[in-house]
Image: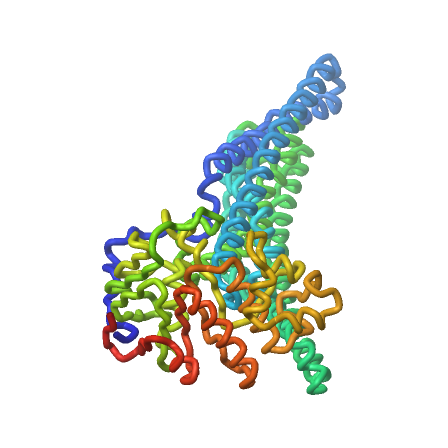
Length: 564
């Protein structure tokens, strides 16, 4: 069965998904709404507070001071109320932002740890997303929702107050105010695209760094340091250009906002001043305009534009957050089928180590791979063969419960392989992946994983004793993820020792002899066959005809045939 032979589910059966950013903040949506309106209420207190201050100055100009103390007290109390409400809202928003970032980071880490070694696509980009980019969600959560709530409420309230005192001031605000969001929307489109491109460049530069560091030994042997340096210079220059593009858009946005806001404030100030001086006799409902009323309008006008400024600043936070959310969503959509079970330790699943596959199919890119029906008895030795890309590694991962099949059923030890049985089944497995990857801990801990077992027997079976003896600290040596200090064959034998440790009932080996010299391949093969001799089930995915010939059965994949 070839890729694409299994039809995709009906897309109409799946409800439309919310935007990635909305899904990220859904758990905190109630807190965000509540805090946003508290912030808007705090901003509204400026209207009576400004009125009290305007009355103080108006009375002073008229030589009246009998109510100054009461007005000052009202101004101070309203200021304290405003500060309390603002602090309350900001505290809730900050905690909500931290919760959103923590949840997104936990989701990303949980997804990545479910991937097998070497399966992380772009480890540098993933690391940048987890360590740096997700923090861009915090400014968005803390600033955008309250800024939008203030922009919806405060300008309308000030506009109503302005029209109640002067139709001229109200008209200035009515004309100049809507121009700001119109231009901001136009600039915001460019801001979102610029932010997305800049974040992509950040991930690409991290990927380049990880790739070159992992190949540092090869770079030195090939004397390619100058070329690597040029690659870094090109990538960093590209990131610089993307970053400057974002800054250009931000400065353009700020310039537009300040231009309209400055013009509006200037026009109101000129009209109020000339009206109080008696040089203008129009624009007020009941001329002449009282000095206190004119001062009140002057105090309110800058705050008419301030929420629009806040939305403009938060708009760039929103553009960056949307780019991060879309990157995280794309990474999750590109992830493999989920790991069965919790991935933790469990008591071994009881019963004979039998394996049965019936109608199993799995996704491969945008298509599907179907597998033949199989029945593998305890103690069998099976070679999975076929050209690259037919699904040999995928089948091993399906048998191990590292991915779930999209169709069909896998039964192990007489029970369906599902979330309830996967952890117990994996407790009986020895896994030898194609690549040699190690934890950042001692070699002893890497091989044993904290499990009980006979370490010496595993080292002898994998013929890895001389390798350990040659290391500077023996089993206490830390090799790093790539096994620095070991040759490919030596690293492969260490991986075999890890798979054989604890005498597993089933051993799954992916290309165990690939890229090895004849002597090392023979040692690895002998170690595997020794486990089969003691009764372990052995399943290998291989291109090696010599290894396949040593197995009791060969199952070719990619030919549309069935084997039972």
